[in-house]
Image (cartoon, rainbow, N blue to C red; front, side, top):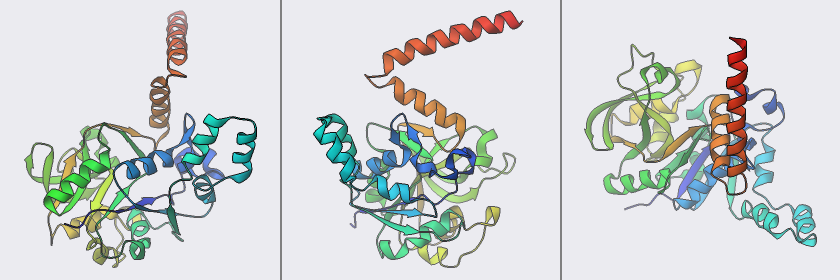
Length: 297
Protein backbone atom coordinates (compact mmCIF):
# COMPACT_ATOMS: atom_id res chain seq x y z
CA UNK A 1 0.00 0.00 0.00
CA UNK A 2 1.39 3.38 -1.08
CA UNK A 3 1.06 5.93 1.72
CA UNK A 4 0.16 9.57 1.22
CA UNK A 5 3.28 11.63 1.92
CA UNK A 6 2.81 14.77 -0.19
CA UNK A 7 0.32 17.62 0.06
CA UNK A 8 -0.64 20.60 -2.07
CA UNK A 9 -1.90 23.81 -0.46
CA UNK A 10 -3.33 26.19 -3.10
CA UNK A 11 -2.70 29.80 -2.06
CA UNK A 12 -2.80 31.80 -5.28
CA UNK A 13 -6.24 33.40 -4.93
CA UNK A 14 -6.64 37.17 -5.02
CA UNK A 15 -8.63 37.32 -1.76
CA UNK A 16 -11.14 39.80 -3.17
CA UNK A 17 -13.63 39.16 -0.35
CA UNK A 18 -11.19 40.77 2.08
CA UNK A 19 -10.22 43.86 0.11
CA UNK A 20 -8.72 46.31 0.84
CA UNK A 21 -6.79 44.29 3.48
CA UNK A 22 -5.60 41.83 0.82
CA UNK A 23 -4.41 44.48 -1.61
CA UNK A 24 -0.88 44.12 -0.25
CA UNK A 25 -1.24 41.15 2.14
CA UNK A 26 -1.96 37.57 1.09
CA UNK A 27 -5.35 36.40 2.33
CA UNK A 28 -3.62 33.31 3.72
CA UNK A 29 -1.57 35.54 6.06
CA UNK A 30 -4.59 37.13 7.74
CA UNK A 31 -4.29 36.09 11.40
CA UNK A 32 -6.71 34.12 13.52
CA UNK A 33 -5.77 35.93 16.76
CA UNK A 34 -1.98 35.76 16.28
CA UNK A 35 -1.41 32.90 13.83
CA UNK A 36 -1.86 33.16 10.03
CA UNK A 37 -4.60 30.98 8.59
CA UNK A 38 -2.11 29.16 6.35
CA UNK A 39 -0.15 28.00 9.41
CA UNK A 40 -3.21 26.15 10.73
CA UNK A 41 -3.39 24.31 7.39
CA UNK A 42 0.30 23.43 7.39
CA UNK A 43 0.12 22.22 11.00
CA UNK A 44 -2.81 19.93 10.14
CA UNK A 45 -0.84 18.41 7.25
CA UNK A 46 2.18 17.74 9.46
CA UNK A 47 0.05 16.33 12.29
CA UNK A 48 -1.48 13.95 9.74
CA UNK A 49 1.91 12.55 8.76
CA UNK A 50 2.55 14.52 5.56
CA UNK A 51 6.29 14.75 4.83
CA UNK A 52 6.46 17.10 1.82
CA UNK A 53 4.31 20.19 1.26
CA UNK A 54 4.09 22.41 -1.80
CA UNK A 55 2.25 25.72 -1.65
CA UNK A 56 0.96 27.04 -4.95
CA UNK A 57 1.30 30.82 -4.73
CA UNK A 58 0.71 33.80 -7.01
CA UNK A 59 1.94 37.34 -7.41
CA UNK A 60 2.25 39.27 -4.17
CA UNK A 61 2.46 36.14 -2.01
CA UNK A 62 6.09 36.36 -0.88
CA UNK A 63 4.95 36.96 2.70
CA UNK A 64 3.93 33.30 2.89
CA UNK A 65 7.45 32.16 2.02
CA UNK A 66 8.95 34.64 4.48
CA UNK A 67 6.67 33.41 7.26
CA UNK A 68 7.91 29.83 6.96
CA UNK A 69 11.55 30.94 6.75
CA UNK A 70 13.96 31.95 9.49
CA UNK A 71 13.98 35.64 10.48
CA UNK A 72 17.49 35.91 11.88
CA UNK A 73 17.36 39.55 13.02
CA UNK A 74 14.03 39.04 14.78
CA UNK A 75 15.16 35.78 16.40
CA UNK A 76 18.41 37.38 17.58
CA UNK A 77 16.52 40.34 19.02
CA UNK A 78 14.09 38.10 20.91
CA UNK A 79 16.95 35.98 22.22
CA UNK A 80 18.91 38.98 23.52
CA UNK A 81 15.82 40.33 25.25
CA UNK A 82 15.16 36.87 26.74
CA UNK A 83 11.70 36.70 25.19
CA UNK A 84 12.11 32.97 24.80
CA UNK A 85 8.43 32.08 24.56
CA UNK A 86 8.03 34.38 21.58
CA UNK A 87 11.27 33.09 20.10
CA UNK A 88 9.97 29.54 20.24
CA UNK A 89 6.76 30.54 18.45
CA UNK A 90 8.68 32.38 15.72
CA UNK A 91 11.04 29.45 15.16
CA UNK A 92 8.17 26.95 15.16
CA UNK A 93 6.89 28.08 11.77
CA UNK A 94 10.38 27.82 10.27
CA UNK A 95 10.89 24.15 11.15
CA UNK A 96 8.87 22.94 8.17
CA UNK A 97 10.48 22.22 4.80
CA UNK A 98 8.03 23.71 2.30
CA UNK A 99 8.31 23.95 -1.48
CA UNK A 100 6.72 26.66 -3.61
CA UNK A 101 5.52 27.07 -7.16
CA UNK A 102 3.73 30.00 -8.72
CA UNK A 103 0.42 29.82 -10.56
CA UNK A 104 1.09 32.44 -13.22
CA UNK A 105 -2.56 32.92 -14.23
CA UNK A 106 -5.73 32.73 -12.09
CA UNK A 107 -7.32 29.83 -13.93
CA UNK A 108 -9.03 28.12 -11.02
CA UNK A 109 -8.41 25.46 -8.38
CA UNK A 110 -7.96 22.64 -10.87
CA UNK A 111 -5.23 24.61 -12.63
CA UNK A 112 -3.51 25.36 -9.31
CA UNK A 113 -3.36 21.63 -8.54
CA UNK A 114 -2.10 20.93 -12.06
CA UNK A 115 0.77 23.37 -11.52
CA UNK A 116 2.16 21.02 -8.83
CA UNK A 117 2.00 17.87 -10.96
CA UNK A 118 5.78 17.45 -11.33
CA UNK A 119 6.23 17.72 -7.55
CA UNK A 120 3.63 15.00 -6.98
CA UNK A 121 4.80 12.61 -9.69
CA UNK A 122 3.09 9.21 -9.69
CA UNK A 123 1.94 9.22 -6.05
CA UNK A 124 -1.38 9.73 -4.27
CA UNK A 125 -1.46 13.12 -2.61
CA UNK A 126 -3.46 15.40 -0.33
CA UNK A 127 -5.01 18.77 -1.05
CA UNK A 128 -5.84 21.22 1.73
CA UNK A 129 -7.69 24.45 0.98
CA UNK A 130 -6.88 27.47 3.10
CA UNK A 131 -10.48 28.67 3.46
CA UNK A 132 -11.31 25.75 5.76
CA UNK A 133 -9.84 25.30 9.23
CA UNK A 134 -10.87 22.11 11.00
CA UNK A 135 -10.47 21.51 14.72
CA UNK A 136 -10.65 17.80 15.50
CA UNK A 137 -9.21 15.28 17.92
CA UNK A 138 -7.89 13.31 14.95
CA UNK A 139 -6.74 15.76 12.26
CA UNK A 140 -9.25 15.98 9.43
CA UNK A 141 -6.69 15.04 6.79
CA UNK A 142 -5.56 12.02 8.83
CA UNK A 143 -9.16 10.77 8.88
CA UNK A 144 -9.20 10.86 5.07
CA UNK A 145 -5.79 9.22 4.85
CA UNK A 146 -7.07 6.34 6.98
CA UNK A 147 -9.98 5.87 4.56
CA UNK A 148 -7.59 5.96 1.60
CA UNK A 149 -5.43 3.26 3.13
CA UNK A 150 -8.50 1.08 3.57
CA UNK A 151 -9.97 1.52 0.07
CA UNK A 152 -6.95 2.64 -2.02
CA UNK A 153 -9.14 5.21 -3.78
CA UNK A 154 -9.62 8.98 -3.85
CA UNK A 155 -11.44 10.41 -0.81
CA UNK A 156 -13.13 13.79 -0.43
CA UNK A 157 -13.85 15.44 2.92
CA UNK A 158 -17.52 16.44 3.15
CA UNK A 159 -20.13 17.76 5.55
CA UNK A 160 -23.86 18.43 5.14
CA UNK A 161 -25.02 22.01 4.55
CA UNK A 162 -28.45 23.62 4.18
CA UNK A 163 -29.94 23.45 0.69
CA UNK A 164 -29.74 27.24 0.51
CA UNK A 165 -25.94 26.97 0.66
CA UNK A 166 -25.36 24.48 -2.16
CA UNK A 167 -24.43 27.28 -4.59
CA UNK A 168 -21.31 27.92 -2.52
CA UNK A 169 -19.83 24.41 -2.72
CA UNK A 170 -19.10 21.39 -4.82
CA UNK A 171 -21.89 18.91 -4.05
CA UNK A 172 -21.73 15.11 -4.26
CA UNK A 173 -24.35 12.85 -5.77
CA UNK A 174 -24.18 9.81 -3.44
CA UNK A 175 -24.51 6.30 -4.80
CA UNK A 176 -24.66 4.54 -1.43
CA UNK A 177 -23.83 5.32 2.20
CA UNK A 178 -22.16 3.31 4.94
CA UNK A 179 -22.07 5.35 8.14
CA UNK A 180 -19.85 8.36 7.49
CA UNK A 181 -18.65 7.01 4.15
CA UNK A 182 -20.34 7.63 0.79
CA UNK A 183 -19.56 6.01 -2.52
CA UNK A 184 -19.81 8.85 -5.02
CA UNK A 185 -21.98 8.61 -8.12
CA UNK A 186 -21.16 12.11 -9.33
CA UNK A 187 -20.17 15.65 -8.35
CA UNK A 188 -21.58 19.04 -9.29
CA UNK A 189 -19.81 22.39 -8.86
CA UNK A 190 -21.94 25.01 -7.05
CA UNK A 191 -25.43 23.89 -8.15
CA UNK A 192 -28.58 25.85 -7.39
CA UNK A 193 -30.63 24.20 -4.67
CA UNK A 194 -33.26 23.12 -7.20
CA UNK A 195 -30.56 21.26 -9.14
CA UNK A 196 -28.42 19.96 -6.27
CA UNK A 197 -28.33 16.14 -6.04
CA UNK A 198 -27.83 16.32 -2.25
CA UNK A 199 -26.80 18.70 0.50
CA UNK A 200 -23.45 16.94 1.12
CA UNK A 201 -20.77 19.52 0.37
CA UNK A 202 -17.05 19.23 -0.35
CA UNK A 203 -15.13 20.95 2.45
CA UNK A 204 -11.59 21.65 1.32
CA UNK A 205 -9.83 18.35 2.06
CA UNK A 206 -8.97 15.72 -0.54
CA UNK A 207 -6.87 12.62 -1.04
CA UNK A 208 -6.43 12.08 -4.77
CA UNK A 209 -4.77 9.47 -6.94
CA UNK A 210 -2.26 10.72 -9.54
CA UNK A 211 -4.64 9.74 -12.38
CA UNK A 212 -6.42 13.05 -11.68
CA UNK A 213 -3.70 14.79 -13.69
CA UNK A 214 -4.78 13.00 -16.88
CA UNK A 215 -8.01 14.96 -16.66
CA UNK A 216 -6.46 18.22 -15.47
CA UNK A 217 -4.01 18.04 -18.39
CA UNK A 218 -6.92 18.75 -20.76
CA UNK A 219 -7.35 22.23 -19.19
CA UNK A 220 -11.11 22.16 -19.75
CA UNK A 221 -13.01 25.13 -18.37
CA UNK A 222 -16.01 24.67 -16.12
CA UNK A 223 -18.09 26.88 -13.82
CA UNK A 224 -17.00 30.51 -13.88
CA UNK A 225 -14.79 29.89 -16.89
CA UNK A 226 -12.20 28.26 -14.64
CA UNK A 227 -10.54 24.84 -14.57
CA UNK A 228 -12.47 23.15 -11.79
CA UNK A 229 -11.04 20.39 -9.62
CA UNK A 230 -14.57 19.08 -9.04
CA UNK A 231 -15.00 18.48 -12.80
CA UNK A 232 -11.74 16.51 -12.95
CA UNK A 233 -12.79 14.37 -9.97
CA UNK A 234 -16.11 13.71 -11.70
CA UNK A 235 -14.22 12.36 -14.72
CA UNK A 236 -11.85 10.39 -12.50
CA UNK A 237 -14.92 8.80 -10.94
CA UNK A 238 -15.76 7.36 -14.35
CA UNK A 239 -12.67 5.12 -14.29
CA UNK A 240 -12.10 4.44 -10.58
CA UNK A 241 -14.09 4.71 -7.36
CA UNK A 242 -14.22 8.00 -5.52
CA UNK A 243 -15.43 8.14 -1.92
CA UNK A 244 -16.62 10.96 0.30
CA UNK A 245 -16.15 10.93 4.07
CA UNK A 246 -18.09 13.03 6.58
CA UNK A 247 -15.14 13.97 8.76
CA UNK A 248 -15.40 14.47 12.51
CA UNK A 249 -14.58 17.86 13.97
CA UNK A 250 -15.62 21.49 13.78
CA UNK A 251 -15.07 23.19 10.45
CA UNK A 252 -14.55 26.95 10.29
CA UNK A 253 -15.06 28.92 7.07
CA UNK A 254 -12.40 31.63 7.04
CA UNK A 255 -12.94 32.40 3.35
CA UNK A 256 -15.63 34.98 4.02
CA UNK A 257 -15.83 37.88 6.47
CA UNK A 258 -18.43 36.71 8.98
CA UNK A 259 -16.93 33.23 9.17
CA UNK A 260 -13.50 34.75 9.71
CA UNK A 261 -14.79 36.90 12.57
CA UNK A 262 -16.60 33.96 14.19
CA UNK A 263 -13.50 31.79 13.92
CA UNK A 264 -11.31 34.46 15.51
CA UNK A 265 -13.71 34.87 18.43
CA UNK A 266 -14.07 31.12 19.04
CA UNK A 267 -10.33 30.49 18.83
CA UNK A 268 -9.66 33.36 21.24
CA UNK A 269 -12.26 32.08 23.71
CA UNK A 270 -10.38 28.76 23.95
CA UNK A 271 -7.10 30.39 24.94
CA UNK A 272 -6.04 30.61 28.57
CA UNK A 273 -4.47 34.03 28.08
CA UNK A 274 -7.53 35.58 26.41
CA UNK A 275 -10.60 33.44 27.03
CA UNK A 276 -11.90 34.74 30.37
CA UNK A 277 -11.28 38.41 29.63
CA UNK A 278 -12.86 38.12 26.17
CA UNK A 279 -15.84 36.23 27.56
CA UNK A 280 -16.49 39.03 30.06
CA UNK A 281 -16.16 41.64 27.34
CA UNK A 282 -18.59 39.85 25.04
CA UNK A 283 -21.11 39.54 27.87
CA UNK A 284 -20.88 43.29 28.53
CA UNK A 285 -21.10 44.04 24.81
CA UNK A 286 -24.24 41.95 24.34
CA UNK A 287 -25.90 43.54 27.37
CA UNK A 288 -25.04 47.00 26.06
CA UNK A 289 -26.36 46.23 22.57
CA UNK A 290 -29.59 44.82 24.00
CA UNK A 291 -30.08 47.95 26.09
CA UNK A 292 -29.50 50.21 23.07
CA UNK A 293 -31.90 48.10 21.02
CA UNK A 294 -34.60 48.47 23.70
CA UNK A 295 -34.09 52.28 23.77
CA UNK A 296 -34.42 52.49 19.97
CA UNK A 297 -37.76 50.68 20.13
